[in-house]
Image 1 (tube, rainbow over the protein chains, first blue to last red):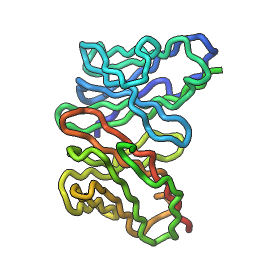
Image 2 (cartoon, rainbow over the protein chains, first blue to last red):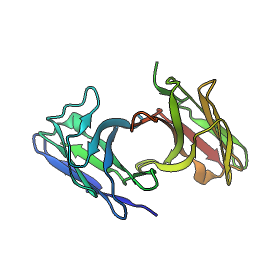
Image 3 (cartoon, rainbow over the protein chains, first blue to last red):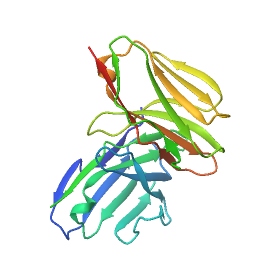
Image 4 (cartoon, rainbow over the protein chains, first blue to last red):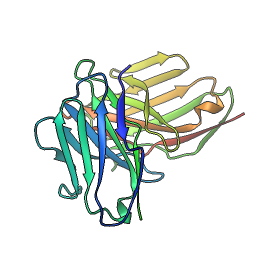
Amino acid sequence: GAVVSQHPSRVICKSGTSVKIECRSLDFQATTMFWYRQFPKQSLMLMATSNEGSKATYEQGVEKDKFLINHASLTLSTLTVTSAHPEDSSFYICSARDEGSRELFFGEGSRLTVL
Amino acid sequence: QKEVEQNSGPLSVPEGAIASLNCTYSDRVSQSFFWYRQYSGKSPELIMSIYSNGDKEDGRFTAQLNKASQYVSLLIRDSQPSDSATYLCAVRNTGFQKLVFGTGTRLLVSP
């Protein structure tokens, strides 16, 4: 079946540094990918919709300059957390929509810890 | 009012019993409804999708949708300890691409 791969699965960084998370659709093309954030014991909150070849659409309250999204190809979207702070520590999950089946597939998630 | 509401639980059921998980949504034009299972520290996995009123069965799982009441539920028959997880209800409006999640219901199945 379709697989969405996220990398890295875990990352620890110092406050003030930037971290890049990759989301790849392995066997289908994804014009649209979504980035979610999940804090402990809370639900998934949509951060932004990533569109191949165009700017991402951010949800209200999400800082576009802090969470940079690039969707340069039909199989890869990246999320860069710039100048990370401890409050950015969270579980970041991407999902990709298979344009053929219209199904949505989730990546394995990336746990970010900012010290 | 939250867009998608679920009881956070935990819902505790004995092994072999039926677990009933409920979800309500606020947007009447919602068209697609999903149940995801999420184990601790893992990303969600799709259990069921349902698009029209009524019941949809898949193995031990039955999804029920009532658009008039803006209500969707998930029944798990013959619950197993391995079913213990958080179950997330998600709703999508056809006019928009995004999926809105509820806060999830934690299910505990005791042996």
